[in-house]
Length: 316
Image 1 (cartoon, rainbow, N blue to C red):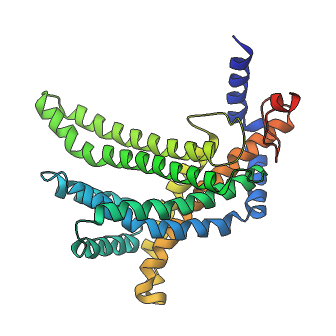
Image 2: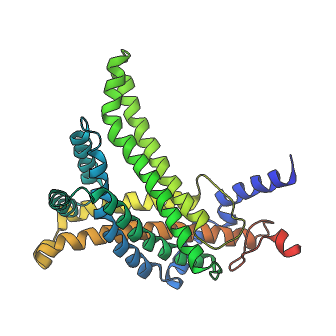
Image 3: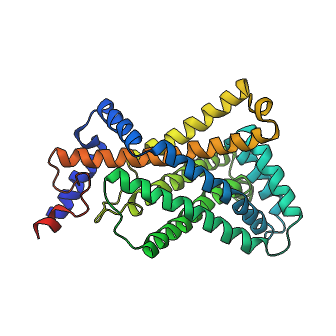
């Protein structure tokens, strides 16, 4: 085994051993960094950009579904169904009502407009995420304004492709599993197994999205690539748990409509976007603290806070 392979294995072991920290110590350090890096405030910036991008993105998807004439209506119904499982009820009603109104009053250019506007809005959120992850690693941004925005746009496109792929797996899987089962004479066990597998695959795409952001966004040289990191698991887990908890809370204690009237649905949607952005950022803080702790415990390739170059670079 070569030295580089050995170092890689040690690094993988280090990150899953939390850099030598206990879970409690890691939680304390992440909480401290959340306060120092103003993560709670930065999550609101992400929520604003998510709100701007969600409607043109959904409009783009609906226009894309129109290309599948025979399955367009079914795909649209499946999309709205899965949105209803993720979004809080009031936010889901706001999204579907707005999308329906816009779709009925938009010409043939909605496909291009939806894609471009969603890309621009989402890339604004990505630049915010780059800034926060730089703060999490304690580094100053040395890339030019153009390079930062190119990275943001590139990540936005990559994440959009992965999210669309996850949606395609889930939306088309509901039709494809029964079709293949009937065509090849496979029983209901195959259909059920396929449907379980499609959700696992979709979840893997989402985790990969987190991993791409944590790898490319911060201005840290010679990052180590991991398909799954503790931060990705924490981020996705927090997002799922927080979304579920929010749905339960609104089911029993929904007072937003009585307090804010018709604006209640908008506030609920913004709050859900805030939770989503917060989950992304906390996952990034988790990875950075593990990296810093590994450096403190003498790992040869781990980076201390504020360290952009690897140990080998510094020795050279």
